[in-house]
Image (cartoon, rainbow, N blue to C red):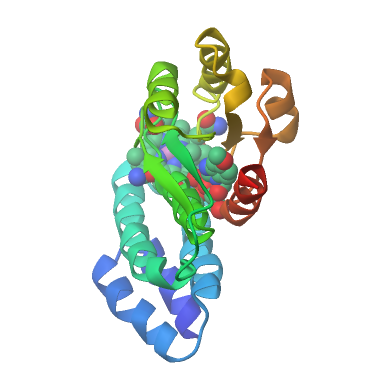
Length: 210
Ligand code: B1M
């Protein structure tokens, strides 16, 4: 088993301690942070997701896998960030109201920061009003919304509407993403951009800033 496969397996087993040892070792062996993230941690989490869907694992197992994921992502963070980048713009990011999933949101945040964008992290369960308040008070020109549930992605429409009601719609670009979100959904709610993954989200955010 390669070290990357081992990282995936340990992630699936929720072994945060092993992840803490294996990720630096993989970096030392010359694996890129991007490969460790994509082929190790994310690959492992997608197996967990499939098993969760098929009732082969339950919330507690998913939570410990998520904790292991967080450990790994934190270790990779300095390597994924480009050093010395000039601040390009300011974004606020959050997982929409009613939704507690934050792994994807945290990855998007990290990738945006890697592009030199200052990011205000509003956390999870963020109301449309809180997105608007952050954009106004902190001068963010990008509002980035993440949702993982079909029942919460509809809140993204409310974020767009809240920006319109607050009179800031023409001052912000609203980006949406998360597993159930699609390009068609993005267009249907009048948001400015949909991205399927964190790296494309960072590219899009950077182009909005420019
Ligand atoms: Co939840 N969960 N979960 N869960 N969970 C899903 C999402 C689910 C698909 C599992 C399944 O059934 N297969 C399902 C949703 C079904 C649906 O609505 N269609 C589900 C469910 C049902 C639930 C609960 C309702 C379960 C319950 O209680 N019965 C509950 C809801 C709680 C709530 O939020 N109110 C729940 C709870 C949880 C845990 C707390 C146990 C845990 C979250 C821990 C945490 O986040 N800290 C959890 C997890 C971990 C998952 C799965 C297994 C993994 C999600 C994840 O982190 N993926 C997930 C199954 C799956 O997705 N396969 C599942 C890795 C992450 C990197 O991917 O977030 O998609 P993702 O981010 C991607 C892209 O989407 C994109 O970039 C990232 C990659 O580069 N992206 C953006 C994300 N945001 C973006 C924003 C952008 C652009 C791109 O622009 C702004």
